[in-house]
Length: 282
Image (cartoon, rainbow, N blue to C red; front, side):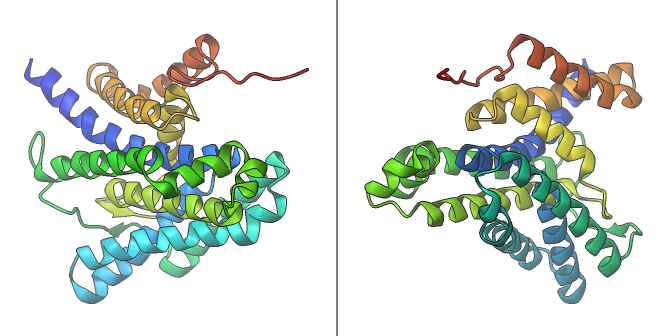
């Protein structure tokens, strides 16, 4: 019973990270219909910036704040300079983000080296459900609630939704569609950087977030790429499920289990468990 409880709590903490990074993917997908494969690279560069600040100052929270700001800036610049010119070509946009992922990981290796560097936790990480685990879950919960409130109950969120669902009508209503898309990318990338800061410890290196991104993408597909709340639920379900697999069957089967879950969900519910089917005129 103790093992089951420990695995559940550890899965909740891991699932919170998958939910946060998956949420960043969903925000961008809802705005542009593009899966941003560069998201883990934005989080990586942001975390390395936090690492450099931490090394220089000896503190944690200044680097934490700088990482979120850096992630937002990277997202906005990417939308403006790289994605917007190919926004009418979904495949082209995906290729751009994949290329950016490779470039930014290579830059991280050249600037900070490919060797692992020690990266601190926000709080004490020892124990079955440590203070750091509590912080991870609380941070993701607050972020998720904030994003949901933003889209449902604020003028900015309503403008962003209008720009995403029907750009032409939004323009005629006075919405600055281009600005809303840029803000959406910035917001999503800041959320992704938060996930990176929570997932990176105890060591940072250029490929540290690759596995986390695979699980986050799986969570987004499980919940539905157009459904933020579904993605959050999917992230927690995936985290707990993979924790059980690791504890009872062995950690070497975690990746295989994630892929199996992904295939099953796509076979049964192609739009995700909470996604909406799209009507297409022919």
